[in-house]
Length: 352
Image (cartoon, rainbow, N blue to C red; front, side, top):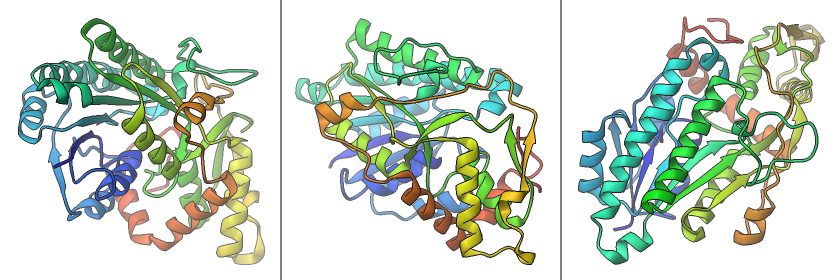
């Protein structure tokens, strides 16, 4: 049976990947996830019971566990999503990010290498290890767009930890021959995203009638990628990319943070008119900027489009409207997300 091993499959991108992959691209999928705060119980429940799905609670840094899962389930592909991923948290607790994103990835790579080396020749040729990374490793760009040849210039502890992990994957491929592939995506959004990130945070605060805080002047630019488009890109890469390949995945959706929040306010206003008629845009407030805040990210995904025929199918306006509607239709998920990190400090926190 066609089996995939996913790390971090109860997180935002991982959960969307699991739901889209099972029954379409693989018959069995094993999800190794530590189930930290970002694994909302409602997300975990939504995956439970999917045909062919197995959840294993554990750490990628537990080599014995990883080796056991590889030997027991014999996956054809390993997708490495698991990571500490919130920039604000990395500024407060960088050691956590180094432990998971660097040391944990090193353990995972070493275990996968041993597994791959022991496979029969035909299975070795077919095997792939896919590491899901971020455009933040490239730092900030004033003009143009990042490409696969852009130098790494990470500016936050999070970005630096991901850059280190990507260098490890490259080294394991170059030195040992492990058929590793690395992808760098732009900012994702869509269903199941934990509300420490900009879009779900602003949706939830807008619905609650709370202030909508924007870092600095709110003119930081990000390229927004609908999560379903990201998943489709990963499917294309897993099926056809060559070992050692690097691909950038972007949504052609550059917007400033201020523009994104304004669009969210307008969408919610139309669906849930505010009491008293005061538009939610009036609740936007400027707060002290994040330390070392990157000004602009932008991705050139031409290689992926040219070589594998992938292109984003969902434009930002359509995807954002669908995302707002999803949150409105899932109040139980909103409450579960609030509860799962009640009392935690966030850079821009939800009221608890």
